Length: 369
Image 1 (spheres, helix red, strand yellow):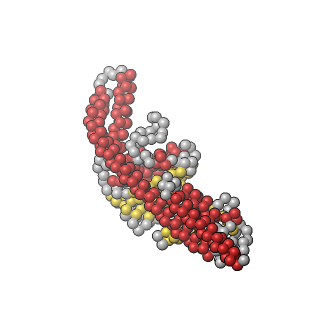
Image 2: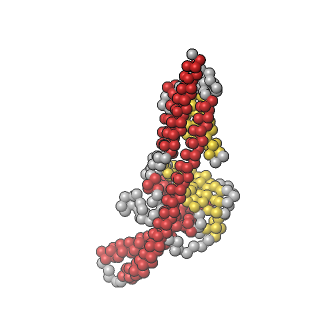
Image 3: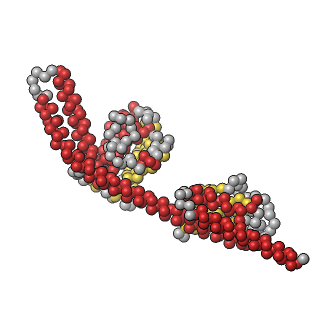
């Protein structure tokens, strides 16, 4: 009888070890599915965990990463649990937990086996490696995308610079001759109106070329000590009436004792104007526009945040490309943000964008002190 009991114990222990090894093998298989996002990986791994414990029908699990929780179906946070930290590069990023949803017989660690302590530790270590690898892959993809985007902008910039120079001379001739014609005596009213249209169209085209040259960093700059608070006050003096007309509330959060930066004041006015006008158009009447300045020991920041329609990831990848626009035909040239990018880049600054559809967009510009 004793021998029979020993044999049963061995078979039970062997069965438990097989379940544990199957769980770890399953986790390894899931980890190799590169098309899955990190969240999808964690959700799939979570489904495997309960089956490896002694009482799978009464087992639920939870994986926590950076305060984001992934729970088993019918999850309950109960006192009968095992927990293990997820340590990535020496930093605790979360933990993996296993719960029994009802009281079970006492074993080595409360209702849990000592082998299950080893198992949950192994799972936590595997999760750490999977998360670290996935984040490194995502970071590499992001860097590659940024490099490709920068290369594309550089190529567009070179082409645009050539086009701008080629267009400038004939455009100046058209504008000059049109203005000469206006000095001719006895012009009919219709001819005068037509000439005015030519002049107006030429000036509009010249303004587009000027913006293209800002984008390609061909416009001469005059650098002086500039206070971003003053830039905000000067430019918003002209834009506030438009905001009032569009029923947009403006909030200012301007830092006291803001350090000066070395910059072209007129170009920074243009940066702010373009970003604010974009924000106003994105809010489509009514909303909140927040303009902030702040600083640290190395940089000064200016942010423009709106409560507008926001942008998708796909749109955000192209917003700095010249002539890219989501506006209806005739509502914009698609040059505003490319001009902003060109000016900020030429000031050796940085521009970061955060946006969520239906919630709004925030542009943050950083300049070195």
